[in-house]
Image (cartoon, rainbow, N blue to C red; front, side, top):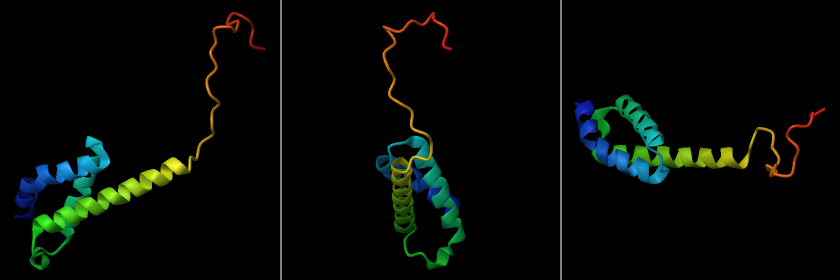
Amino acid sequence: MIHQQFETLRPKLFGVAYRMLGSASDAEDVLQDAYLRLLATDPETLRSLEAFASTVVTRLCLDRLKSAKSKREVYPGIWLPEPVPSDHLDLEADPS
């Protein structure tokens, strides 16, 4: 029963996730996570499945955006220098 209701809400939830994240693959990932959370919830405690699913998707999107921001701010790799135009370099010369 929850599966059928979730599938009817899927286009709306995908739209919310896609508009927040800007990526279809990220939106699909969020919908999968939301579906798993929905399955773990007791359906009798829900007043509105649509409201609950929308809230879960929105919060998962916000968490993903916050995580992406921290990943962008803290770059774990080495920083490479800016590329230099090689028009004036002798590419035939021995690099050693």
